[in-house]
Picture 1 (spheres, rainbow, N blue to C red):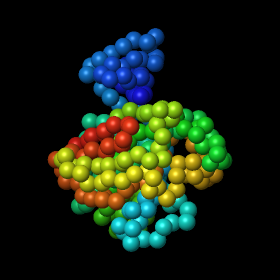
Picture 2 (tube, one colour; picture 1 turned 90 degrees about the horizontal axis):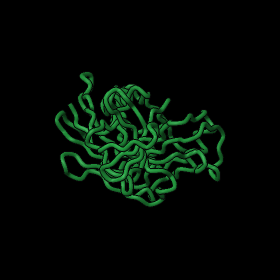
Picture 3 (cartoon, helix red, strand yellow; picture 1 turned 45 degrees about the vertical axis):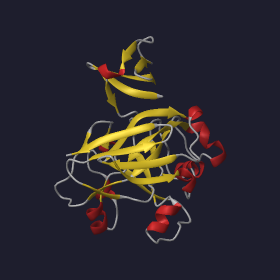
Length: 243
């Protein structure tokens, strides 16, 4: 696994093995994970999210299966890392969690076919598409509801594409230790190669950009003081408190 870390004033990428981190920037210097601050593992220029991309979520909402991906975006200013706090905005009365598998882009690309999609992937991580649900419903479009600072937690680390097979892994969420969501990526309506072809046909994807692939059924409300976790089989747990 790979991650971004801070040691004193120094920020670097490193590989993770158990509780040890080996710097990729300092001639292989090794640190204890406990002596580092774990940062968001990617620094995207943009986050492209997919709405309604699980069959079981569409059934839950009694909605028709979309015939092409529905996309929206989050700003990079919304990104936080594992252990950082989600700030409940004063203008909202309903904030929800949405557990998602995220794809991290590893090569600048445009107009990539689904057959070549794997060539541009760096790896995968956990993502929480935090949403001010009342504002989403009020506005009729999603920008305000999805874009508050702290509304894009991701991490803890990136699992390289060579070590992760996203076609059938469990994606789940817990709030205060209680399970809320659980489904398999085998229920994705549009798989990752299809999403990369579709999105890269619209916009250039930069190194570090993130595609959040949609959320399973069981989305629900967060309160101040809650601890929300996103767990993805083969990647790990992204944990954040709401304040």
